[in-house]
Length: 400
Image (cartoon, rainbow, N blue to C red; front, side):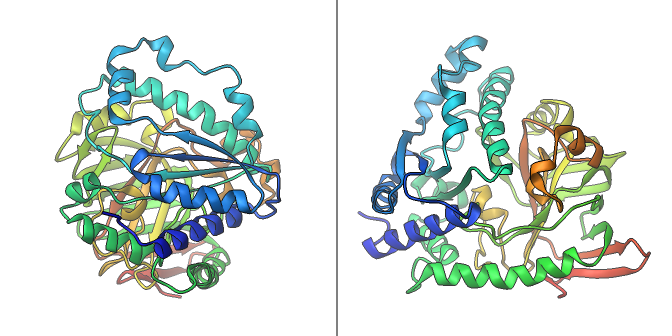
């Protein structure tokens, strides 16, 4: 039985094309786009492929590995195999203009018993290729977007029926709108006004308080809040990459998450001097500690984000970070990501953002990027450079 109608699939594909062409303006006929997808997402991949070809793009198709393939790689391979890149891989990633991903996982827990060293190897290998794409994105040569297609596994782990899960995705991505691209344009316009307000306040630090946490991050020099840029469908969050060195206090993720096959719940991080010095979790604590020890930057903050409940219609736990980090519900959400930062939050000419300058400005570097979500009612206060305090977010929405 089909999950979505032909019209809904076409709307999803159009939203994704809006996403990638918004993320990187200037696409033209003859540009190369890599389309990666899990097998259960084939219905959407076929519709999207046809639309991309019709627009004149050269499309390279790549199936993502199945759970059985990933288990074999992590349990039966050598270090050299996991770190292996095919001849031409780096050149290929350096040549594509776009990368589009349809995630439709058949399993979320198949790697829960994989050796930690194996998981670290594959994380580092993926990061080798991702860094090439990021470098080209900084030069305006490449763009990317991704989405999630409903599966029985996602629905099961979220505690929903497949029909309920698919309805949440459709609602979040405007698949039942007559013109979803127009709707995304409106969201981009309205969120742009909030970003402009935030970026002209002159923020020095941001303090987030809820019943379970009290965290302060330093906004950092030459930073912007960004978001609703086409990179994710859906995306409602406004985020920045703070100066990791100014992080202090306690962060708590009341939403569970799945990472590398592990179900993680109740992560609590205590920061001092920019680093998580005390790490606990109600479930999978050993895994959390291991992940945050992947490299030097894994226990430092690379992203700080807020989602306004007026934009996001997502009101259930989805067992998928893409949706959970954009949760609207009653109180919106905030999340941090431990690990790598986003260089496009730089307020200057990104083409001049050298590795040395990134380090000087406190942009975090890591092979890890793990979003940890809090949906509690919270108050977010910005201390401005002139010493004034401004409440920028409360009751699940920006105070703009």
